[in-house]
Length: 280
Picture (cartoon, rainbow, N blue to C red):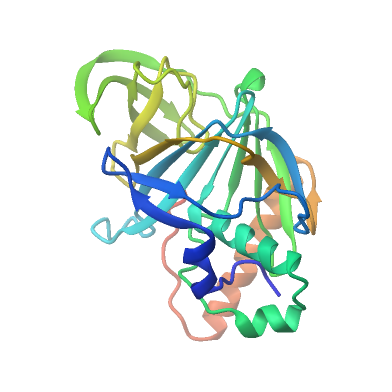
């Protein structure tokens, strides 16, 4: 039974959302991972001090730029580590953890579950603050296993340029960079002293509140920020995870995509152009 299936009724009891004063998203209540009695296998790197929510607007088909998919993503920020992931992935982990702690069997859990919107942004990206330019990625390889690898060559250089605007009440300044085939614009808030942001991006003198490539194929917009109290781990799943070198992981993921495309062709489905966030 794969974890990316959700229990609809339990979800809003365990992990509800409400708008905060900034008009964004705030997590309230809930039963968070890492509490006593956990049964979901996780590797904890830090304890989150902030949750930053970003609405991702992405263009899956470059030939149809008007067709977008919307994804609620989340940055969990600790003192030394952060992790960026699809918000639905965190919800799923929380729910599965709670049901396992109740002693539910796989059949019981499966029978109790309903399908919610799938996890659209599949990688989980761990940033180690002292090791800027080296990030740990974990993503689904198949229905049973994740693959984890370290990308040690994720380099980019920010250029601070003229430009100011206000996002969610915060005054922001402008920076630009290029990264793996795309040119990016970032708007960061010096008034929020968190040198972090969505995806692999970090290192500016303030939290990145908006980031987009110049073709607007990928745009991250902050839609909520919440200071965290108590135990809220910055973690990666550790059960059924295969850790391997970067090149081997890329080969495995490419083989998976090739297999998926062959299955689509065999089923008579048209293959659509790919538009990954990293073009190089």
